[in-house]
Length: 109
Length: 112
Image (cartoon, rainbow over all chains, first blue to last red; front, top):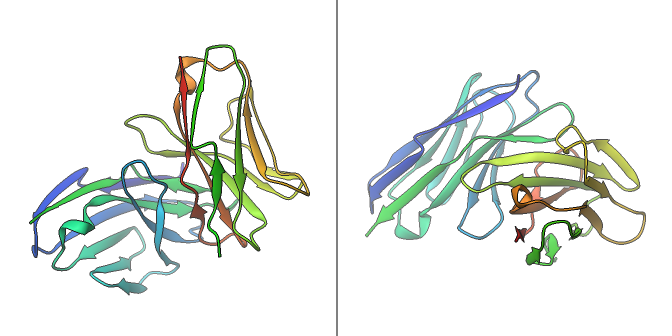
């Protein structure tokens, strides 16, 4: 059964304190791994797509990496506006996304 | 370029009534997906549609729920005879193909 597990569930950082979020997955035939950001009361906002092991993508203070079993979202020198829930999802062979439970990040000034 | 649009944003229904949720995909996108987010739970896939076709409905409850994406107009998620357990945020996403999906702001359904 396709499954996505994210850790930690919640993370508190001080502004400027770098860290990483983990996403472990099992899927029959990975067609893509996706990272989204979700703010309270809003829809998920697309961040990155990764397709193959070794691939990396960056956007401002965020960097996503992919191995055969997991993905990491590295946050460098975070700011309070980076506070949100970060969602990881994998795409199955029918195109539907299977989401993890998310990591809720709080960055304190 | 407008994003995915959903309406209404908030919907209150009494038990036993019908709920109709609408989704207009991004321009040029012909693939629509519906997801449900229950309180304190993650996003769960419900149904995947292309114009006039249901491609994958493996996440749809067997009864009371239906979805369509007609040739003209928005995609509709319809819930008949709502119950309290249907209270959730319903998100629509669109895609130009089986690639990254862009989400709308969601419809928050409350059943009283």
